[in-house]
Image (cartoon, rainbow, N blue to C red; front, side):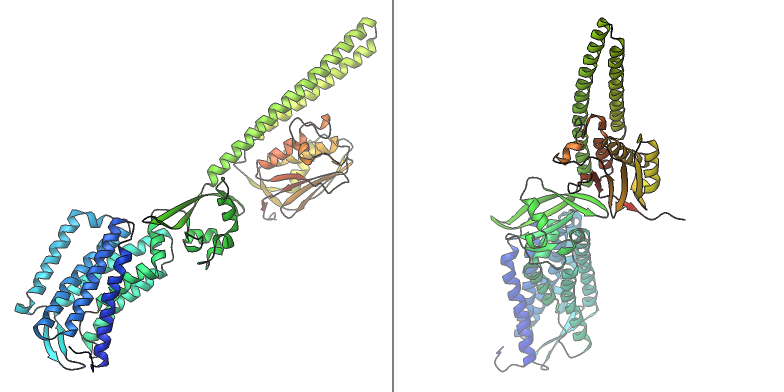
Length: 551
């Protein structure tokens, strides 16, 4: 048929079907580069069938008579094969095995051959469609579809819907944005509307418009939403947060879990990782690979897996997977803390035993010499000093017993009234001559006994530090214990918390090491305020607050 001088409607039909056929042909190049073999075969088959379907429809439009009839009949045969290619692609892409199951294959081929038999014998029975030459809106072979055609069309759309359901389920399981899939469903379903309009009115031709929709779907998957579809397929079965980067470190896709973990990912497509998630970039440059995040009132830990993937021999991107390892990391850190604590125990025991033995040995020797000389009072004083030294050693052992008893991380906590804990600790502490003031309204989440022992250790330290007054205050998520005793001076703050350090003197024993240990079992931090020079100020940070007391 000569296209020159043809009607705009005819030229429009020729153009869209030609573009559909060409688009499928162009898409074959990229489809053959899909890494997964089954998905590749499914997409190549879909493009070949859809492109062939569009080309045969184009041949039908460009020819008349018997040849036009043959082209249209051929388009019906190839169009039905497109449904099979579609289901093959959906099954392979979503990781299912339907396309490899012999039972489904036999049923599919049998059903296909049966329907094709009806189509090919249509010239004899006319149950599928009838033709009539018309000149409006342009000369062509008009098609009038019969009931059997609509039955097969309904079955085809039902099978296509099954494929879309498989895709939707995968997108939802992978926790990715389903809008790209929704767009493709819309353009694929549009031809069904065009079919109905063509059947019910003279606005459009009563022919199959489906190859246009299938071609748009295939081209959309390969060129428009290719990154989204690739990311979804690569993370199939991954229940963790995932961020998909191109080879230059630009963010291409991220699933819902990643966006909930890192809200800044929302709308970040195309930006560099170091701009959106600088902390992640820093972690990737180290050997640690563990990211710490403070969420929901506590620390969470994520193992970052950085995996490159390629197309053929060329790297095309990276996939960052964030696996929640909070429980195992907490256990690891707790073991590290306990090992450090045990090393401190050993140091403290060795230090105190050596000191005590040296003192006792020296005092006993002095007492013996005094008795030899008949100096009974001197011998008595030396033996008394020996007894006091042994008593101090007993206190140290009791302190170590406290550490052993309370040194494990707290498993069960409750809301504890701070004032009650402070006053209970004050009643137990040996603080002759020391006064205490407390401004600690509110409650914290803690183990009551350990919290009381923590304050008791702070009060005992103040008593041994030459203080006359000790105050306890709560400031936001910090508890501050301040005394007016001897300042730390040039002594390193960490020395006060070392087992065996006995800072500021031997009498203080392990009061501050105990205090820090009891704080750490709750996940709190402890430091000395080095700027405070009117005594010693102990700052307990990251305390978890509870609601106010109920009346």
